Image (cartoon, rainbow, N blue to C red; front, side, top):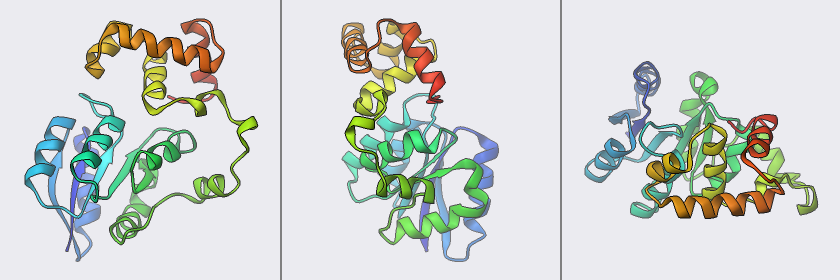
Length: 208
């Protein structure tokens, strides 16, 4: 049996994913979590072959959850499930250690296939992203946000959502001074001078 843990904060989605998985005779959902803390506790005490992880969780960024899981269990395959733009997030998350990226709208048709591929040691990506990896533009054609680190990119999106430096610091468990330093680096790398410019860029490129 392929033993799966599902992490998603939407009860309806959670039930739907569980139904899809358990309709397969060789798959079993061995645990469900609705936030990061539940996820960590569950993965630490429950054997599983892979984790299906929603990138948007209420108590912690999915990127941070991914990093923590890979730190604790480097060989545990993690399939990211998201509504966020695939072309903006998939490659970044694969580089951070994810074994695959699946849009929620494709879960009904592709979830089982993605789980099988990831469980067998492969990477699950759509043809769009695979083509992007093959025909990747040279560095001179990169967009500004592609030069950001994962933490910088995360803070950029939080700024664009209207969060204050204090709120960002609290959510990421870092100091306001550290957030301010990240913000300065982001502006320098992206050649922007204020939050309004950053927000406009994020919206124009549909990063949130």
